Length: 365
Image 1 (tube, helix red, strand yellow):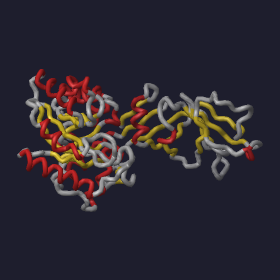
Image 2 (cartoon, helix red, strand yellow; image 1 turned 120 degrees about the vertical axis):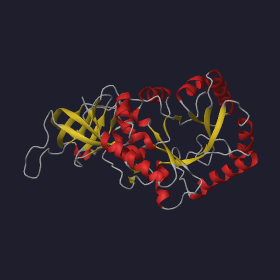
Image 3 (cartoon, helix red, strand yellow; image 1 turned 60 degrees about the vertical axis):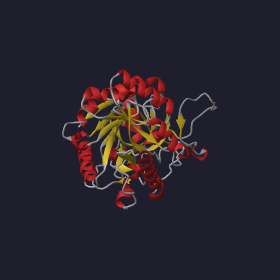
Image 4 (cartoon, one colour; image 1 turned 30 degrees about the horizontal axis):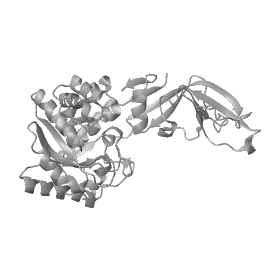
């Protein structure tokens, strides 16, 4: 089987670095574990007592994953990082100490569930700042907060926004300043202190270094930077964070010299994806290797071969074909054989899908 290599020590070191980084700047942060897909073994290895000491909360967007977080460590403060479905209000209150919300009727259901469980459920109300994903419209903010403050078992602990996830709207200083100003307006009008202004994510980290973060932004929700060491804003390594935290290795199950251009009538019955080819190369051939994973496991666009000479040919549900050229080095020595591994660097989405696949081995280092 193909295998995902997980360097847990490097990931834990990244989290420890971020703990200190945020502490020095009077910012609290939530570690977002979506990429784990709720894998208990992964969570146990990453969320050690030492690692989580500086984390404000641990978050996920799946109830099953939150349940597993509580299973791994019942003392964890958990945060549900997307607006919950109203029908699951009982489970959200049970497994999430905090949730992000945008809909009044859902918060009403959360309040009833919290009453039934004899709990106070904390919420952060998300504001729409242009990304056109989740968020209360800015014209409705004051009235929305006024109604929510009346709930007996709901504690509004903050205001937040989401940027950069769907359309890629950048979290500029002006965008984040709007969030700060709304926090001030709400606090003054209702005489309520909002503890958290949650405007930061992995994409926002470089703005801290550029002094482009308003002082009121005091809560970050971080996933990709903690696990991959980069910020999605520029996809560059952030500070001293490790970036070589995951590897993906696949086995060569067939290796033959074959034509470059397929033969026969091509119909629309294909179920795979293929690279383009040039009819001029119809008489030419090269060595093709078949690897033991496919579209059900990962999108080929989300993995990069370490050997830059390897070219993508095609992928089906359970196999990937790559072109190895002559399969020889400059001295004429054979490069690959059946049974050898081909090494890839997976990105965030690749790791998330690979961890969901039943057909990929996981190796913790």
